[in-house]
Length: 341
Image 1 (tube, one colour):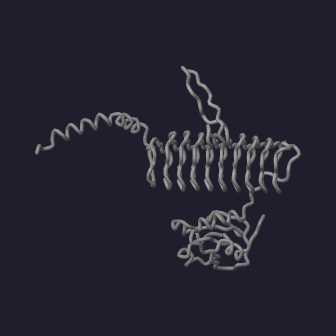
Image 2 (cartoon, helix red, strand yellow; image 1 turned 30 degrees about the vertical axis):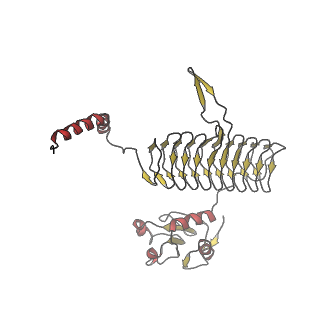
C-alpha cells in the first residue's frame, strides 16, 4: 500500500498545509468514518459538525471551514477536486493484467509496445497496434486493425470489433463492446435488408467507457467519442454519433444514430435522444429527459415527470390527453369575452 507524508501530499495538490507534515497517509475515506492514516475532505457546509469528531489524519477543506479546526488540514480552493487527486495518488486498484499470460492468443502480425500486459485467454487479432504500458484484461478480444493508445486499460471481457482506434490513457470497463454493427436496415416490402456497417469507431484520449456500454460502428463514416469524455455503464451509442470533448453521459442513456453532442455537456441517466439531432456545447439534460428536436442553446433541459401517487398519476394522464381540447375551449371562451374595439 502506498504511503505519502502530508508534506508530499500538499506539494502534489498545490495546497497549503496546516499541521504536521511528517505524518503519513495511505488511503482515503469519508469524513465520518475516516481513521488514522486516512485522508478525508469537507466541501459541504452542512457536514461541518462531523469535522471535530473525525479521526482522519488530515482533512482537505476550504480556508473558511478550517479556521476553527484544530487537526491537520490541507487548504484547497476545491476540496472535492483535491480529494479526487489524492484518491488517484493513493489508488490501490490492482492491474487488469501483468505480463503476457501463456494462454493469451496474439496474432504474429500484431505490434505490442513496451510494457504491454495481456491477461489469460485474451485474443489479439491481425494487424493490431498496442501502445506502451497498455493492460488488456482476461478474456478480452481485440479485432483486426485495431489501435490502442499508450497507457490505456481494458478490463476483463472487453470486446473491440475490427477497425476500432483508441487514444492514450483510456479506460474501458468489463463487458463493453466497441464497434458492433449499427442498426442499419432497408425495408423491401416488409423484409429487412441489412446494410453492412463499414465505418469504424474513433475514441480520443483520456476517455472512460463504463461496463456493459455499447458503441456501434459507423455505417459509412466513423462513430466518434472525443478527448476527455466519460461514459457511464449501460449506455447505448449508435452508429455515426459524435460526442464532443469532456462530455459526460450517465447510465442507461440511449443515443439513436447520427446524433451530434457538443463539448462539455452533461447528459443525465436514462435520457433518450432521437436520431439525426444536434445538441450544442454546454447543455445539461436532467435524468430521464427525452430529446426529439435540436438543442441550439446551452442550459439545463428536463422533460421527465416526477413520481406521484398512482391514482393521481392516472388522473393526470387522462387530463394530459385532454390538453388540446381544453386549449381550444379556452381560446373560444377568451374570444367570447374579449371586448370588441
